[in-house]
Length: 296
Image (cartoon, rainbow, N blue to C red):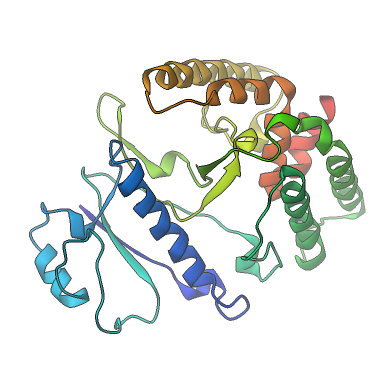
């Protein structure tokens, strides 16, 4: 099976935010290259140029460029497409999807592409500013007076509380590549539930380890659907199972010399998990704040 990934200018708001297509493409290509060079033992995905199984690879290479020893296609003439593209190959047959929406697609100002952060605080404040921009620019961001008051109050409290949820030990790093669009639709497994492939590295961010939390979809529920009671109890059980499995694998990994599992447990126990999820999920911020953050 082969997957052809092409970024649509319509979804990348090329006119309102010039360079957005190139930004998305560079991010994805850079992540694939990093995995190929640094983490080959995982081999989640390879570029078409490095896979010999596909009998039509030579034909495609002749259309896109000429064969090269490098596993990435080198173009020597302008591409006939007006948008950037990536050709990748998946080792096993499967299906997957990725669907997401962001503020840039709606023409709402976000964080400039040239921004670089050296501390967690400034990054979180800019994310909260994105929420301010959503309320200001999006016509249906506020449903009524009461909803508007609650959203603004939640944002004010999120700014006031953020020092409580930040680890001073890791506020300046170290940093690690994080797959911020890592979700079930991007993971393929075999009949024994062993992960065989991971796709869609378009949205990858280098974050301080203090912001790398356990994933929220362990029980198959959205972040704003995990409420106190049965759902939260089940989710907490899954979090502990996830942490134990992560720690076991960390001990087996000779390349791992950093206590990621310990940091994630601390993040859960302190309530930082809910704070970071609220900041990163714009439309769920109010509900997560009311259900979890303000109770911490």
